[in-house]
Image (cartoon, rainbow, N blue to C red; front, side, top):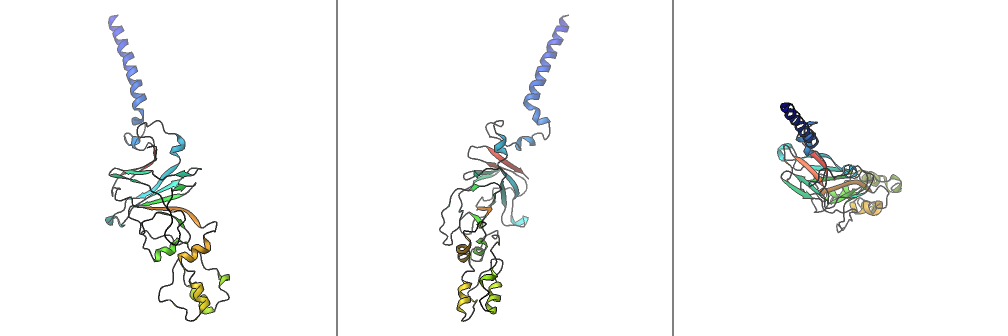
Length: 263
């Protein structure tokens, strides 16, 4: 009888131990083992406290570490706001195994003078951010607009800026000479006239030629409803990405891991 009681006691203790192990370590055995821990989006100090809303806000959508032997002098990290709300990501942090990088302010409307004031990066729904590991050619981060491709002719940005420049409106040049019209229409894909380009003594053509520049495009199109795109460019994250394998986390100002990317 005594042996039976002792046996039942050990059985009860064993059941309690199994329940404790399952409740506390179950996630390790359910699919992914230790890897599952690293893909959880949560606060570093409290892995269970994060809300679904925060998990679904800004996501690391793609990544390339970069490096000469990988065929590129720079790497990038792309983010996207997949929520239905505007989100300020200024001061958020990109973390990798070898270091971290804070997301700084950027220029929303880039003035032709180059003296534009930087402000917080506030992402609207579906806005995207490309964070490059190299440095900005002019020291600025900015929101891409449809005239910005003209700047590539004078400032060697890497990567090259998108060539979104509006085409010349034929209705605005129909009263110019045919030679002038052909000449103006030759400037496509954000190409600008060079110092050697000339239209002779055609004053009207020369005046129109002045509009083919970032300043001319900005002054003409800055009030267009589609002047600003949904793409931000940010530079200077440095060589924090391992060229082979890494885990990269997007951490907000409250130290919550909003998104991660394993490669």
